[in-house]
Length: 114
Length: 113
Image 1 (tube, one colour):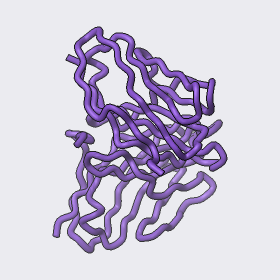
Image 2 (cartoon, chains in turn brown, cyan):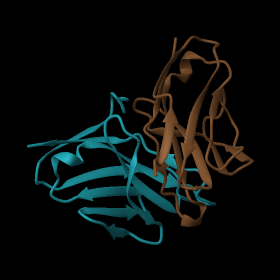
Image 3 (tube, one colour):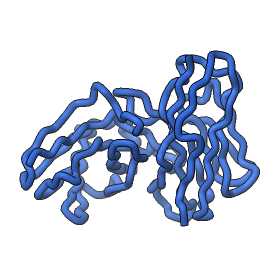
Image 4 (cartoon, one colour):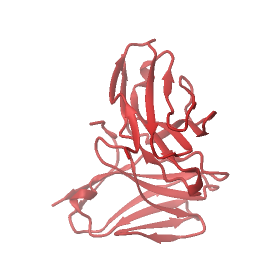
């Protein structure tokens, strides 16, 4: 049982490049989400999904796309990276039946956009 | 590992002392609150939660207090240990469901021997 796995751990991009941050969980969790963490600002919700085929926007969705084709995977796509997207990104999941919001987080992916 | 934050407020305590970390939340409609702990290079880990119909909840060495009148949340850690050194975040769920969790900026706890 690996929990929530994020890849890559580190990535450097040039402005305008595209990339995908991968997130996979093996806990059969219905709910998955992406957060970004910037110094002094805590974690901010980018996108979330309550099940395969269903996604919705969080606080800061602009510049990011997501899809949820399987229960296990929830990739985050940057179509044209900007320096403002330099951040640490966390994927998190939980079961929908918990009745609460106890998320299990991955270890994070640090992205630098030059 | 990933840096959590360079300009966080810091609480420094001596090993064995009790720690109190405070959090002011923003939405009076929030009905569920969680405390997370984040160690350097890791993702946040759940510590304890509380619903808005309660004003206190206790766990192992931790207690969360909720004051809805002034929209204030606190985390008390008894007999603080070096392993408690981390950044602590409070988070709230605005009313209407649990799909959006809003995090505070965090407080760094430094435990000195």
